[in-house]
Structure formats: structure tokens, C-alpha cells
Image 1 (cartoon, helix red, strand yellow):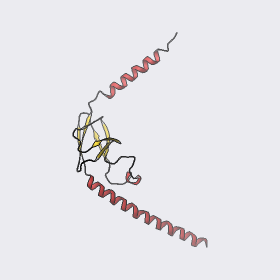
Image 2 (image 1 turned 180 degrees about the horizontal axis):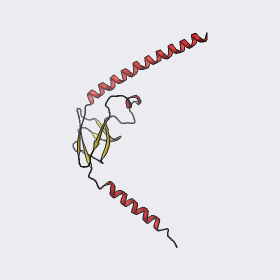
Image 3 (image 1 turned 45 degrees about the vertical axis):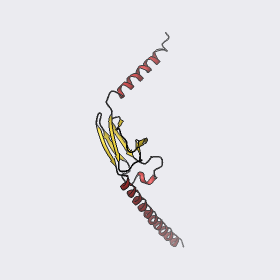
Image 4 (image 1 turned 30 degrees about the vertical axis):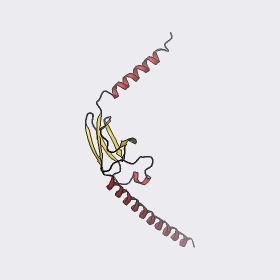
Length: 140
């Protein structure tokens, strides 16, 4: 018996059911404000627009990351520092979350984190030099 047509039928029914489940819930909204104009806003790494944003951004229920720096050009050490560059919010279905980005203070925090990083590099360079110098003394 030729049953090759059953497999595409079950696959298409599976896709239809899967897509229906995703859109059953109402979306949540994120209302983003910033202290300056023309700031690019990224939600989950995707550019949404520039401030001021007039309408709230519809998103699915879950955790979302909001920033004004694109993830592709961020300094690697800033991803792990405590600058608050990325705001993490949890959005419920049908709920609206208000987020305010203070970009002026964030720029100052990033400059301070870079300065601290520069000093820590000097300290580790000095410790490494002292360690190698002690090894050279012991070798002679």
C-alpha cells in the first residue's frame, strides 16, 4: 500500500497546530522612555527604533533584554561588568511594562568601568613582572 502522502499530511497538521499555540495568548507591551532623543533601542538584540518611541512595543510573554548598545559592538568586558547597560524585564501576557533608560548616567558608569579595567590591567602586569623576576632570581 502506498502511504507516502500520510507523512506530509501529518507534518502540515503539526505546523498548523504549533503556529496556533504561539498566537493564542495576547502579547505584552514594553513602553520605553529615555532621557535623550535619537537613542537607538534594542530589544533582545534587535533594533526597534530611536527615541522617542510613540507606541509601546508588542512582545511575547517572557524575559526580554533592553539596551541602547547593539550587542555586536559592545566591549567584551562590559558584558560582565555591573554597569546596568542591559535592563532585563519579564513581561506577562496582556501587561504593559514601563522602562526608563538613563543614558547620561550610563555613559558615566561605562567610562568609570573602563578606567577601573585599565587600572586592573596595570596591577596584573606588575604582579606578573614581579613573579617572572622572582623566577629569574631563583634560576640563577
